[in-house]
Image (cartoon, rainbow, N blue to C red):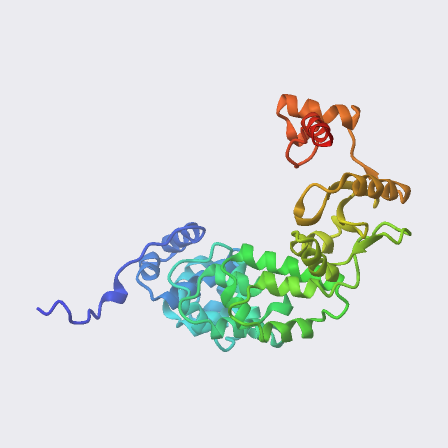
Length: 371
């Protein structure tokens, strides 16, 4: 016998069923013997249609039994036996029509592509029907129709979860899992809240021309740079030497001061941080953090190149910020005492993220140089 010849009985090989359908399958098999065996050896499509029916029966067994019986011609007093016998006799399309009263285009093909296992979420079967049945969901349905290869349950959930602005095949194929979809949705919500021009139509247009080499986070950041509706009002600074940086200003300031401000788009867009620059030479940046009551507190300061800021510039900047109502974080111990304590105990994060100042050594070096 030729071992390479096609086996026409492959489709009849039993495949296990696990999860929530097991209890219903056992009940149906008790009411109508051999029903379980039929499901075990059924095609992927027939199994999914049976699971669709079982998901509906969980809600209203008697009503569905009547619909299945009307389609199959099977009558009986026991709704379980009536449903089980009908599910054996009916073809996949007939089962779906009995459940949903119609069979939308592509629903059968989609169920055939998801494999033999039941969805873990029962409601996904009806959600999938609505997706193909309702005209307003056409864009979501197209994502599934056009997706190449086998469909997974998570891929279907992604199509249902994506924000309407992200309903494009480029996005659908890039989103790896449901967590990715929820993260992308969060980015779109922030864009809509902070950028007045970010309509659904405009967001879709920009996604449609997104090059393959550019990630979704880069795309979202480019939209946030157009922010014109800040979520948090910055501190009111009247001093001409201090400038509050908007999202659009971060890149230029980052280049001028040779620091990482260009990477702080999200920090500003979410209203968590505010950055203020001093024009006094050699320049400095103050990082402010928002408090729960809408005020600002000075969190950190740095100079060009992310180095420790010039002390005179920092002191002057701190004083001007305090005059504008921006308080600073401070220990009960004077700063002059705190730094040597931090160095002595090796607890450098007590004062800042900077290297230990070693002020005494610096003073001695200055005296030696002066001599």
